[in-house]
Image (tube, rainbow, N blue to C red; front, side):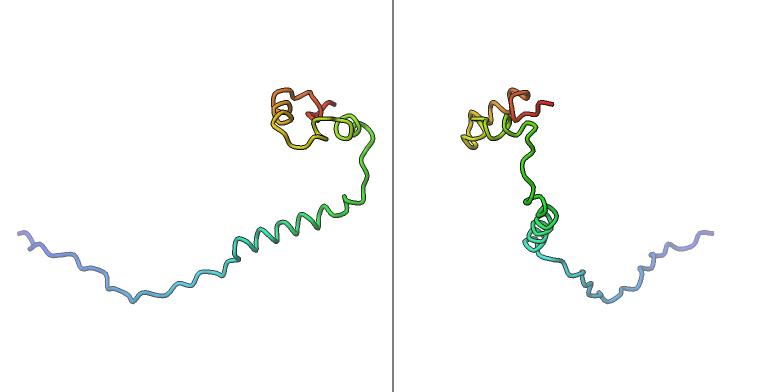
Length: 89
């Protein structure tokens, strides 16, 4: 004999519980803390001078660097990696 088909019982419903998310810092505050952290870490480097190995050739006497950020300088930097300040060993 077969049993009559019965409907499955559903689980008893519970009242919803309010979930509290942990407090998050605002994005702008995280950015400010990151910038301040980097400044604190690298501040001692402001007391250092340039090294005289190749700074005159790559920075102080390089016309492309001294002229500022230009399209010509950017194109030269991207197209010719050996042109200073592209990193000659």
